[in-house]
Image (cartoon, rainbow, N blue to C red):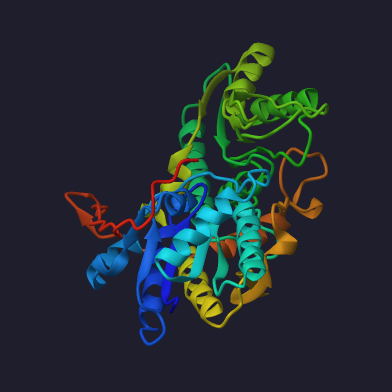
Length: 418
């Protein structure tokens, strides 16, 4: 049997540039027509592979691929699914049955640190079975927490969106200063790492009087008294204070400031830390307050893409195809910073097994000594990643985000029950 089909799948939370990666994969694979037959995409990630719910990307012509590369969200759908270790091999058996049925010789899995664990395990299983599959990871995450890469596609655009939001909100609140003092709190994503919160510091441009005046990150335990003292000092000086809060900030005992819910598997959905902090300020200091949660908007804001981020997203997609066809299964294209000023970078392969499930947190040198802000070094690291603009075509004043025709591949196996 000839295994000449390439399969691409999203995993986990999507980004403003994940479809740019997908488009780059499809284009790069089509350039290898002598080796690659079909290029398929799984509908809703690894779950789609298990359900044998596959999309034939042949329906995407050049115009559709151009639109795909500038559309946010995950066009092919995504899911959160961890490969089980205690199912007797049922999931692996099903995956390889699908690979065999559709002659899949290459699997490109676009995800975060948990997805790199899946890449390493699937590749190890292919080797154990003597199967020709080459499984390659493709990095993405707005959290910017994959170990082994200088940055993650998706982060730059989310950082640009959040820094811009804080810049504009800061100008608003500064213009509405009243006698009682007012506080604005913005809660950003960041379960265990503060990369996105740190990005909002770019809005201040190094000026301590500009928003944000305080940045709270999960890497530092929340000190309520020290925080309130800083809020009071800033508000007394300026008449207002702007605060960035990572959703995952914790107290000194490790408890979360706030969580939305916890499912039967123990997964905690975060949300509400910003509201909790804002209400704390009001109850203890009496200041008027507003708070906001960008939530999905921070990772879907393709109207204000970082051109650098988009270029890197496409570069890792192209490199992943190259690695897969060259037999480098179990690897991932990592972004390597070559120079800061001017910013230069390239892409290099790293193994996924050593980095699987690890999280790259803010280094100590990026966090202010008092834990209430980030340093200039953090800003210097992030700034190149938000650089450059990408002009989006519009229809009736809105970005052109029309849908895509999805042509399903005929199922060849019994329905998956799992």
